[in-house]
Length: 342
Image 1: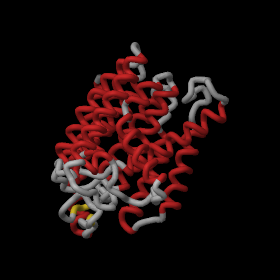
Image 2: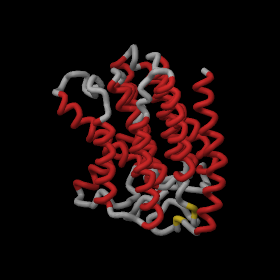
Image 3: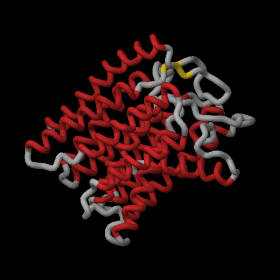
């Protein structure tokens, strides 16, 4: 328990303090998100909180890997740490000056492929139901999609902090139930860092996470979720991020069917419609927090009551989407739009 407490509190404190420094620097450099017709915020806000959050997470994961190596373990977090560091550099360049979608996707695909290449051969996403090459191909697509959808969904104050916190808590519990203290410690690092950033990002946000935070965090969470699935906890790995997966997939599918450029920013996610309908950022983030708390319980329940947990998750997410959509209907029109880069 000492390891878990340390893994939680050190990133929490580091992000709380580090975000203050990063915020001051961003203000001095005038690296700001300015409101426009496509934004969900109303005043210029510094973008780049990931410069405080991501390094804190990576340093904690490196420390845990060193401890595992000293204890005779494999220190398996080195590979995702390296990939997340590459994504941090790439994404900060995008936050600062903008990069092409093709370049970003290419690098995302590269680091996902490298991460999967380092996976143990016996960790299979589909539990031996498919040939090895097909299993790895599905894992590649799932991980790459999760990295990008996590970035797509980072559109209002507090939402990424809420998602990272709840998925991290769920993964910590699943790992502890199976006796995997190593992955539990890695997951709780993300919880501490996310809560530290939420102190700055809760509505009205003083700073936005930016791609330098959302992309690497999506990569690391994706690695933990796939790892859980590879160890047999596939239902929990599907349930915990169920809202993000469903909202992003439905929204992007609708946009693709309308012939829109799905890689371009927009304001058509369910949570964004709720904001346009007049709900506050804090209200929407709190609703998602409540629904995700139920998903955590269902993910843990899936270890013993699989079908009940999956059915409960489907109901939970459906009701959440209906509620957000209902809040959005209070607005007469949804402007064509784009997600703010926060």
